[in-house]
Length: 209
Image (cartoon, rainbow, N blue to C red; front, side, top):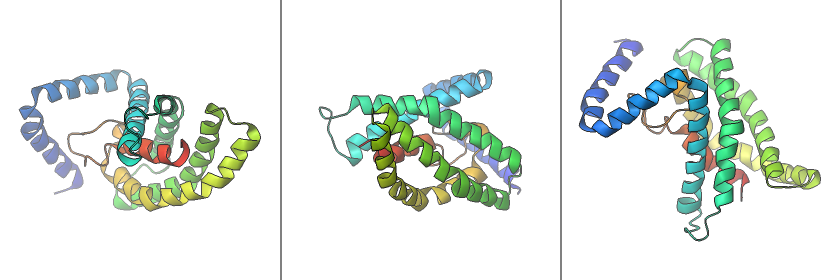
């Protein structure tokens, strides 16, 4: 069975067995689908911002264990704003460019996309994101440059521990219009469909302490 037929069969099975048992979830999913069709760019950007903010909440509460009273609300709002204003548009736009450069969907095409993404885009993205966070937090140009020099190497190394494998599966399994969407998708693995959530935790740990 080809990959396309496999996807259709899995989609149908999950739709019947999963969503049919949760009418509320099905209605919510269909509403999201309609909104995504009518306003794809706006919905993806807002979704990315929301999941980036949620990712920071999880990072603060479960990873850093700050507790509710010590939770940095301003940091979460910063992550939401950066998700809507920078990460969502930039990453979503990059995925579209990448799909034009390498339009195929085979395993080899996914590997090419991952190599281009991680070899070219990721270093530039982090190099722009970290100073942007510093500027939002009110750092001077000198302090921002010092922070970038201090944090960038570790952030990039940490990126390479996680994202090449995740992005390889992402480019092979997840359709373009869902790569900044919420979990769960009808057939995609749940850990891949929560990438903005994971990205929010990763970027929060890298840059907003």
